[in-house]
Structure formats: structure tokens, C-alpha cells
Amino acid sequence: MAKYEVIHDFTDLQDDNQVYFKGDSFPDPVNKRIKKERINELLSNKNKQGRAVIKEIKE
Image 1 (cartoon, one colour):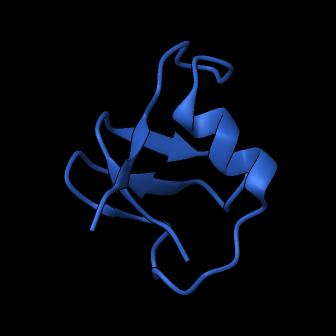
Image 2: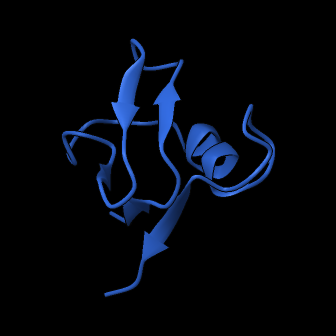
Image 3: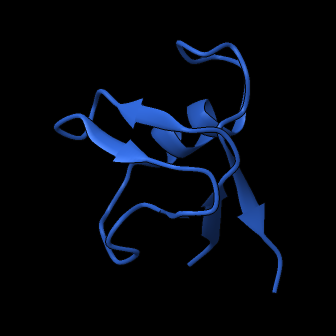
């Protein structure tokens, strides 16, 4: 399973308004199931902020 880190603070409107801050792991808790479509949205500019808000952590 890929791991992600928050690179810009955001409130996840699709996850009960969960607030994420730069440097946090995404999702929180890490074992929470998030749809691949949502991950792709947050990795791209196709979200309300218009920029990627998470990045994949390469191990």
C-alpha cells in the first residue's frame, strides 16, 4: 500500500471535514481506506485548491 504525505494544509470535505496539516500522513489513520480516485484527485490539481495537496512517499 502506498503512503502519502500532506504538502499543503487542507480540510478533506469527503472525510467528515478531517483537517490535515503539512507533514501529516494521509489518510489518518494510515490504515483508513480511501478510494484511488480520491487519492488521484488530491495528487493533482483537480480539487478545490487547484493544486496537489499530498505526495507519495517513496520508500
